[in-house]
Length: 236
Image (tube, rainbow, N blue to C red):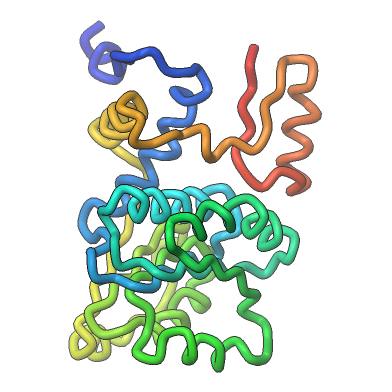
């Protein structure tokens, strides 16, 4: 069937099953940057609500871009979340790699009383790039006050249609770019697969646990309870 063949992607090189299985979520990440990616001069990237699996993937992507010289200006990645457990896991898992790449990884709770003061100290002129992984429109809209002139707001989280208020005048005069994305295309999946095959991206970096069929229910339960803060791979 031609329709089936259209949506089958050939794996050209020898990569792990786990790497291939994680291409789809990574394609969603990659697709969100198609219209407005990090620029060489960007210094601060903020992953808002970034303690979960998808937020961590945005974090990994930014580190990889710095490692490969495609985002040379990045000095700070800020991950905010209301879960201390998630923030601790992010810091423990990615802190050393970020440091080795010349990036300071900050993990903050936005509910802290001194959050605004710390933000203004971190980026007096505003942050360059915000990836919004939070699903609360008011929270995302409030974060835009910390976006610098010419900055980008990437609406990645699944916000509901009709939600949120925008001050168009501020966007106009501050020359902000706001972009959104939902899902991915076949082209995005092929791009991620090729990058993985070339060794330029390791989709396994987003794996938090591996389980077999006997432990399938335990794995699903662990995800539901938030005990695993990244993707779970099931091997049949």
